[in-house]
Amino acid sequence: MKPDTTTLAGKVTGGAPPAAGGSVPAGDSGRAAARTALDRATGYLLSIQHDQGWWQGELETNVTMDAEDLMFREFLGIRTDEQTAASARWIRASQRTDGTWANFRGGDADLSTTVEAYVALRLAGDRPDEGHMAAAAAWIRSRGGIAATRVFTRIWLALFGQWSWDDLPVMPPELIYLPAWFPLNVYDWACWARQTIVPLTIVGSLRPSRPLPFGLDELRVSGAAPAAASDLWTVVFQRLDQVLHGYVKHISHRKPAAAVRSAAIRRSAEWIIARQERDGCWGGIQPPWVYSLIALHLLGYELEHPVMARGLAGLERFTIRQDGPDGPVRRFEACQSPVWDTVLAMIALADAGLAPDHPALTSAAEWVLDEEIRGPGDWQVRRPGLTPAGWAFEFDNDGYPDIDDTAEAVLALRRVSLSDGDGDGTGSGRRDQAEAAGRRAIAWLTGMQSKDGGWGAFDADNTATLVTKLPFCDFGEVVDPPSADVTAHTVEALAAAGLAGTPAARRGVTWLLRHQEPDGSWFGRWGANYVYGTGAVVPALIAAGVRPGKPVIRRAVQWLM
Image (cartoon, rainbow, N blue to C red; front, side, top):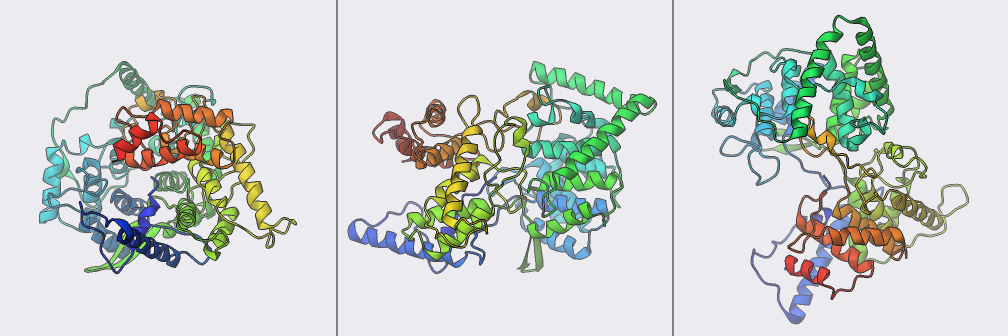
């Protein structure tokens, strides 16, 4: 999930924000106060720019990342006492007074997150009879115990013999053979989901079990019943899962079926290896990264193999270490956002009045230009004739440029004045490179528009809902349909390029008008709230030519007020 990096300004030291419900001074004093705040925030932002020109804020997540990191290292046999103690301090510090853990600050307690955190602390040596552990276990039992957790949590437990593979949904590796036009093929999943599902088909086929030195009986509830099916497709897929379980048993004593399964596993492994990024990650995010390493390890790849070694070493970049009151603290970022943070910082600084040729902006622009992606990616399955271009979210995620970052990069680069010198050795200067990159990006953005006129984040027309009905998919969003925030950013980029009157921009505006909520807001999927969405859409509509007095704008402003 992309953070709103404008909150960096809130980290300025040496002062406190206005109290909740406080008022801003009126008149000249109000303008002076605003100017002072803006100058301080600008100074702070400039002070944290990296030498290479980029910005990066921490992408906060929850303790599932830290718990799964310890379980992952336990499974591979590489967990150290130092790592365990430091991660355990962070997990304990994140526990709430009722013994639970949430998925976001101030959120409701989450059962699966609490179970995973509990298991990680058991790995760290915390005893079940300790107060914080007993409180967590009691709460877990009150919510149905291990049986009520999501599929991913039960997969982790199955890796250690704490849950039966027979009681997990089957995802066969033979999915890799389905053509892109066939329902439930891997490209029907969003990019983050498909990169996670493919390695898990291998793991689920091999069914490993490496026992822990302890049991988890204190987290079990007898007689827990599965949730009833809610619609016809859910019933159909539950029946299909029963058939697949029978197929798994059939494979063990039928050579032709076993040969097909082995070939599918090999094809899936090749698919995985082909998508490893330069820094060793997969997709720049934690789930496909750790599951890919586990899958390859189970297939016999030694830890010293270049693919494995690169993957394990890359995890260090995503690890944050700090000193805590009780000793070193270690936590893991699920993802990183340097491109996103940098282009938003560039736009913010330009809005704050920095000159277009200010060194901070020009160095950032040069770094952004060097991050442009010109190679192939999975998005070409739906748009095979489109020339590669664009930007990704992370340092190294070249297989998955995204529409949101690309749109903001276009807007950011247009705010900077680059010189003609210091080119790439081809005879073109940085100014020419920026203009060429902008043209490529606009062409790519236009080509990635979905059939309904909106834009998703990573793929075009990734709207198949059938995959969401699979018993496996109880863990969150698995498709990438158009969203208001991404569509708005793209419309704004097209308008900035003088293309507000093109069919693509007009269809995007129509999509936005059609998806306004009854209360006047828009939901921002990648900021996970309505202020984020509304704050993206209103400037985009204005840039595209919608007059501020129109009802659609007034209703949005009234909702914000």
